[in-house]
Amino acid sequence: MPKALVILADGFEELEAAAPITVLRRAGVEVTVAGLHDKPVRGSRGVTFVPDAALDWVADQPFDLVVLPGGMPGTLNLRNSPLVSHVLRVAQQRGVLIAAICAAPTVLAAMGLLQGRRATAHASVRAELSLACTELVVDSPVVTDGKFVTSAGAGTAVEFALELVRLLLGDAKAREVARAMMIDGR
Image (cartoon, rainbow, N blue to C red; front, side, top):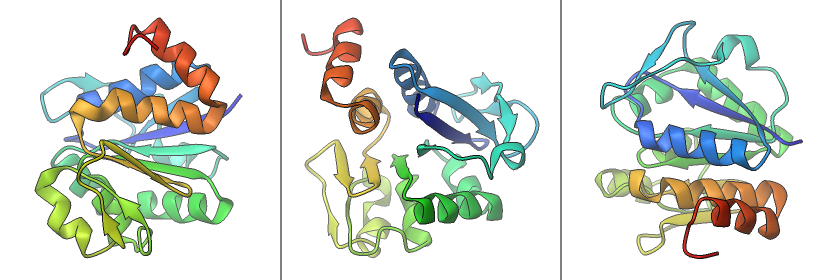
């Protein structure tokens, strides 16, 4: 069974965390939700999530996928965390799938991970992102380029999550999960 790590920082966008966590678990992926600290994490809309672990407890465990929800100031908190940078560098070296949504692709961009890649992000950070990637895609809600998946924002969170299922477990599993969720009559 594939393993995924979803990293939460105070100020994350709740839908961008809840959709991947829920959809991946529906697909049978073992999801670990980690906060930057050993405490509940408050989202940008005031909803509090209780992580499974603090990031430093699980940072060196092997995962097949690392997910960064966006939101503000959550994205800035992710970007300013040396431990998040460490986790992402190790994931890249191991060939792990790395996914970021909304403003969170700027975390990858700041580390140089999107150099030479196609990507998308929330409209509010596209100018910043365009300086760091080869092609900024504005007409697609989800962009996959190699081992990197980026998405536009809260409204694209379920589609983003289904793409992660497709990449980890195949088209049939993604369609099965989408059907069970009554999405697009798939």
